[in-house]
Length: 143
Image (cartoon, rainbow, N blue to C red):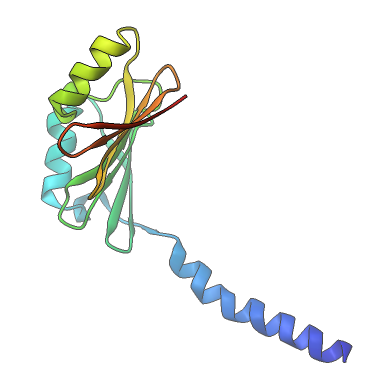
């Protein structure tokens, strides 16, 4: 009975290896990023370089020379910009979000922004997280 349990445990572990291997992205040369992704970085982060790029399924993940991380979809459209302790460039933040943050939290800056089909998630330097619909409605605020 003990041998069967050991065999089954080994079999499960053996079967998990390919699944876990597929879960992680693989590093790619920066040249393999979509043109739109490279242009986005050049336009919005002109003084920084892409130091790392990875493809994970249909998602491209990049890291810039200052530690900022940007994710792009398969077409090269940004889906997440995480500038850690720096401010996300104003040019990529919808004006309704910029206006709300400046009027409600004038001392805070936007450190992270993420977009999906429902709307935007924003992380501020004062540790407040905001969720907006695509049409500009504030849906949620967490601190």
